[in-house]
Length: 258
Image 1 (tube, rainbow, N blue to C red):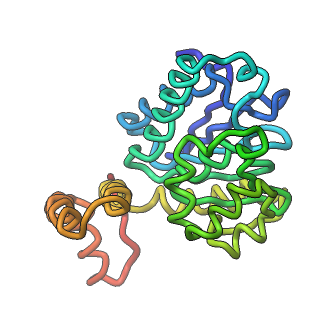
Image 2 (tube, one colour):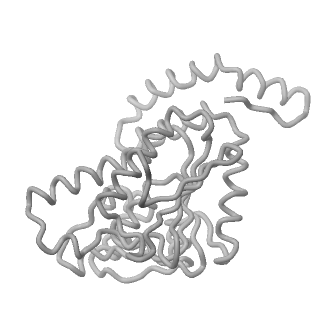
């Protein structure tokens, strides 16, 4: 697929994905959703990619849904639109590689949902998050009602959703919504430094760790134990495990290969 809504560049195992519609504040138009699904789905089998950084071009990370395309939407078309959005969230969460959101500006509505689907969230000091659905008479979508309470708690999530007020980057950090706040000019540098550390890690173990956490969020402890046993069995047989043990006893940094 030829990408017209996003820019993609890969170097040293790190794939930088930039939402590239600054003219509409990187709103998640249908074409962008489809391109991102294709991109994240394809990266699952792309051995040149070990870590992904997702950011936005211009002043916004993503303004979420484009209201201009929603004014005359029918119930049937709206459901189809949501289905594609759900596939996008799943493509990010199901990717067995770390995904870092570098939130460079406004993350509004579904733009916040996209960030929440990532594994680590870095935010520029000028970024803000807003669950803006209530302002236009809608409910939170693209998984926000599932993901946000698990990060910040039920009451804080409902406060964001029912009032629809902006949350600054610093407030988001205090709430547990973001991992780190960076100076605006430093945001991508900090994201790359984090990505480089992850890219040097054991890919299989990190991918399976992500899967375990995702499954553990909505399954029982008994179910998690079963999946954990399968995942750990695979890791015990991996070259990364052998290298990690050898490096530990030889008092050196491991050189993982997966």
